[in-house]
Length: 187
Image (cartoon, rainbow, N blue to C red; front, side, top):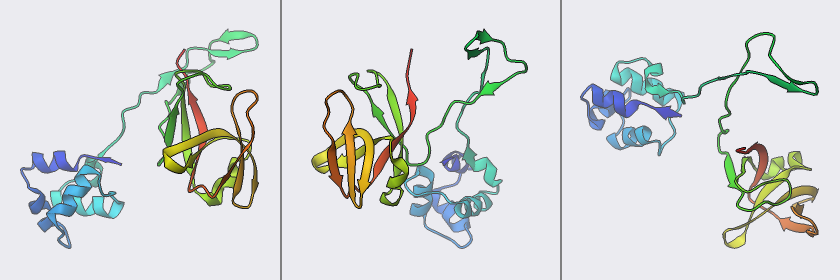
């Protein structure tokens, strides 16, 4: 969550210590600083507590990401492009919480150089949900493997790397998995 705590605090001429003392119950200036900078997660409880200390509405402390809806000019189908019957908009995507990405440097499989692959991070208990999906898995020494998850036997994952002639690889007990969810491609 992006907050405006610092901006509001400064606009009111208050120090971190001032806000910390005004909180009920009082807290430390260090905690307020961490909440301002995002090094500590701002919960709804903290947001309400700080808003009360600053004498503002909690909504005044939240910054919404700037996204503009895009008007749909045409719908492309098997008969070609046609105008929509009524106004339609699409909203550009935002990454999900904890998402990671992969930048494609050289074309491989169905991915082209310049593509961005957005991945959701899965914990081991969700690995089975990623069967037949493209996944990124961490390996020792800061390396990774990216390919199709084709099977799972206990804690062993069977990955088919992209590209022709690639041989199946077995990965045991990865800590997490990035599951490809969106492809961002410039034309």
